Image (cartoon, rainbow, N blue to C red; front, top):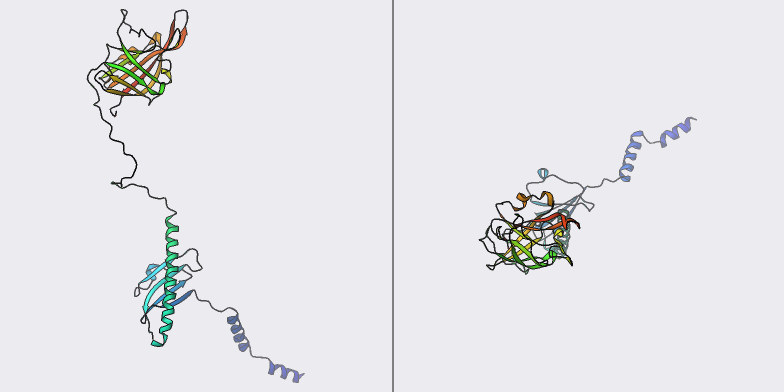
Length: 306
């Protein structure tokens, strides 16, 4: 029994030895890895390019001020940061062949790093919306440049209208003058296929409302202003004048008024600009009295840009 104890005491190692052995084994199992990998690329016999591949990012305040370094932040590599700095190094004549090889390696590495930097730059900038703002002096292109349109004054002198054209309704008709009936109402054209202009109102282009009137239908069918109700704001009405000028009017609104309560002042009253009124019958036709229930009135204003 005592002999066995002596044998065990001789073979068993001290606790301190066991702990140190365990620590050594632990170090062998988990070798310490560096978070920075350095690449030394000789450029000349006295200059070395030092490339640091870092698994972490550094702040500008903590970077070395002694050596100017280029730091590239990456997002798609195992390394989060690449630092490039040029330093002095000792070279010998025996390593001249290695210098030539390393110069080629340096060139390849520089190309790779330039590609990485370019990819990062474009990936960041392509996520932004392109700036399409033109400069104050744009470069002329091959596009056809329209000549400036003649500008008319806000009003024109008196000149009788000779023709009216409404492209949207396919209307192109001469004009005949109409006056006033003995009961104070406006005359209507004696023909159904042409329109008339009220010769007691301002002529088209003068200050005030020029009045052009036409029939909506005839005993044989549609008349000159049959489609007048189809006009919409923004449509164009052109009127040729005796002095050789053509005046364009833009449609402002299209209204229908009962003949029993026709707004005379609103339609024929004075205005501060050169306007136009196109008038015809509308609503429901009463066969007993041979009259329509309403009047269709188109309001327009002269365009100075002709």
